[in-house]
Length: 203
Length: 203
Image (cartoon, rainbow over the protein chains, first blue to last red):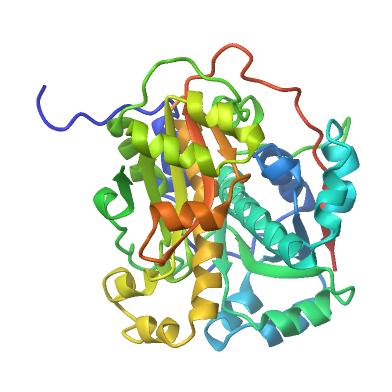
């Protein structure tokens, strides 16, 4: 009855801040390591979020060795190299274009699911990329849910990275994500968002 | 000291359940309407989640009129038609391939950002689709954050839908999402997820 009433959300304000509002893309991290157990807790949370026909195309490569880190840095754009060198953990998030081989197990009530995708490599790759991208979004929020900061990057030579890290030719890197506790100088200024009226319309 | 220790998450258990674990894709809804204020609250939460260069390619069309609903149903795959007819609100989530026109405002510290995308329509469309897909993931979780259930669908004739709803030729529908309170028979059996070891590896 006063101003525009904004509908309250069911999600607690604390969770809204942790995942969306206070959370920010980090550009610098402390030295505190990120354990496999933390990544498992993130995965075991975000794996429940939906994909088309439960197809779960996302694959995650944790870059743990110095040798792999050096190879990865080599494929990053110049502006992303120092961050990729310094982050406590870097993960490559990729789409598995052969996700359909798992469908008999992950979508068992529709026995024809695998064959639906088997015949058209172009369409299957687009489906893999879209659904893995959904899961990249879930994963970034999952990193925040673990009390860590994410620094997702898309500035890299994808063909070079794919050739080095996925020589099977069956994966497409979508994002590289720095993960850790935010350090000194982690935050740039908050950038403006498009308004509701610019993004949402009704017909 | 007992079993495999799973790292605790910073996100409360209640929020984990609301967004990920108890949340499910709904296949049936009550008649309770979904207001523009609820959608605005969802947007004003999820708009903060990150995109590449803050490019925010997602556009949302709320299908409010009977005429638009009938047009949309016509493009849905047969299995999705009844749900699309019955849901209290249906939204089309699309990528704006001309997102780059907003970059001087949304990424102001890099004046060359718009021109970086202007010259290559194919690359710009791929960038729009990837980033809007991230935002589709955020939006689905935002619907859940509002205490509503989402029923995302990718089974539709995208070319027909795009021609009908985006005659400017500058948008690509990525998902159609039913939104509302879950009704009788909303839930199918929970489908299995891939294990951590199938999805995450280290190098």
